[in-house]
Amino acid sequence: MNAASATLQDTLQRAAGAFQRHAFVEAERWCRAALALRPDAFDALHILGLIGAQTGHMVEAHEWLGKAVRVFPGSPDCWNNLGLVQRELGRRLDALASFDRALAIAPNHGMAHNGRGVVLRDTGRIEEAVAAFDRAIASAPTFAEAHANRANALVELRRHDEAVPAYERAIELAPGTPFLAGGLAFARMNACDWAGLDTLQSSIAAGVARGDRVTIPFPTLGMPFSALAQRAAARAWAGHRPGEEPAAPAARAPGERIRLGYFSSDFHEHATAHLLAEVIERHDRARFHVTAFSWGPDTGDAMRKRLAAAFDDFVDVRGRTERDIASVAREKGIDVAIDLKGYALDERTGVFARRAAPVQVSWLGYPATTGAKHMDYFVADAVAMTPAIREAFDEQVVVLPGSFQPHDTRRGAVGDVPSREALGLPESGFVFCGFNAPWKINPPQFDRWMRILAAVPGSVLWLLETGPAVARNLCREATARGIDEARLVFAPRVSQQAHLARLAAAGLFLDTLPCNAHTGASDALWAGLPVLTCPGGTFAGRVAASVVTAAGLPELVASSPEAYEAEAIRLAHSREALAAIRGRVTAARASAPLFDTAAFTRHLESAFARMHERAAGGLAPEAFEVRP
Image 1 (spheres, rainbow, N blue to C red):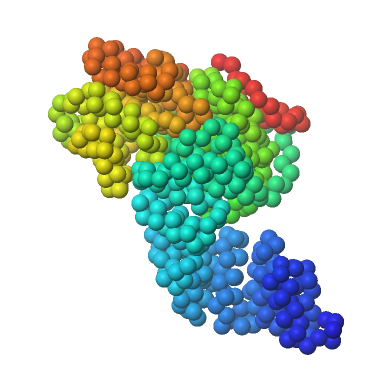
Image 2: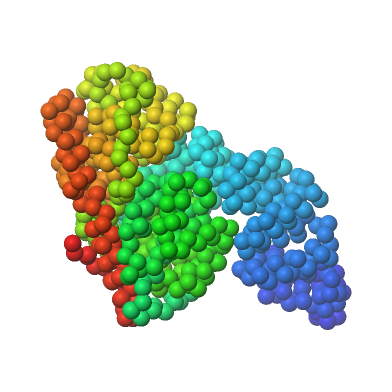
């Protein structure tokens, strides 16, 4: 029987069968045959829409599905599929409306609840997204994707202890699902829930070594991974999200101002903004035109206003697809696109996969290789980037003098230090400060800290308060190591200025491995608090060494974990030695390279100019060093 003589029903059955076998060319042929028999054949229109979605032709998929729901608006599955396509096209309000239409017809449509949750999460409505995923799970308890999406949303809400069982359930329902193991490990790391963590991380390491897609890249920064293992995880993730890989736009000839584009979601009160603000203000406007591409919230806070005024052009691209953002950058003629996010939370690496500019640079936001062919350069320094680590980077490495990390010296003087009582600290006893994110704290690091407390009677460890689960778990771990849990003091979240003021109440900042303090180390030094660090074998594990060295205090870079412990104990017992170090930390603010933001900006500009000149001359990216 050929298509011309087949009945409509037979033709539709053949189309459906071919689609189920993923024989999309055959399925499309039968669908078009069905439409020749009946132009409003709903099933043919629906299948054509699904074929477009499966093959990445989202515009065509949207057209076919739109026709299908107009023919038969009573199909919840078709409305759900239309919503999925609209989400891919960045039409999020339309997608929500389509999911709502599906749910109006079938209130227990688990996929529509899940799709609605994904769009709500896309738009920053995370609490509502969790509620939508809850309804998806209530409608379909074995729906693994909904459990995984719920876990991811809970991580964004910092409800890591709740995310752990959500990830575990998703893995139980769909073992081997890409990247879920890494999500589970990261949730445990953030909750300081270390039961079975070594086994889980070892399993992830074995998967990464095989080239499996077992973890997103970011959690590997806090795992006992080598730089090469971090690259393998990054490559697996980058390969999972290939984008369109168009040719780079042609570089403009030298002569005009170089157009820099900074891309981030963090142009507000955020650690990255605190580092970056003065650099943007100091850019030489005779040589550079500076544009922000922001997909983060418009918080209206002081930093947001400061940055909006500092950039020559501030482009709000919230709600735009990665393809759209890349197109806007190309239309604006950006010469050098600087990704300030990498694989950190709320990243948009797909913008760079679609070639936003002739030159694309990873700097400041992600301290490891992206493992992506479309990133040309990585900005580093000689302390954080050793020759061995450089071998694990796919980008061409540009080495700046001093530290790769800038500093905002215009944030104003540090305020008066609050009293110990006001800070919840004991009236006497040495205060060790461990103000790092909980995912950077691990059993070996905590062992070191507890041995230090045991060697310094009456001392306390001051930690960031990030939720009751973290406090509960760390207190339990301290007790298990013979340390009274009362010797752990948790500091609540406060404003940046209040945070800087309270730092000086501590005696010594104790850094972490394998991932160091980054902005936190810089903040501590600006507040006059010495930072004791121990460098590791990855870039992320050497950032504090870079910062401390650029502050002129290389003796605070311990040669080994054992030396780190010994130095912490020595300084806590020697008031004179600590006072001398603190005096040098305070003096560094006036003279150290770390705090010379004017010079840093000139060095960074030299790097960007050289990158642009190479591209304009038709030369491939090449590693180089910027001389002071």
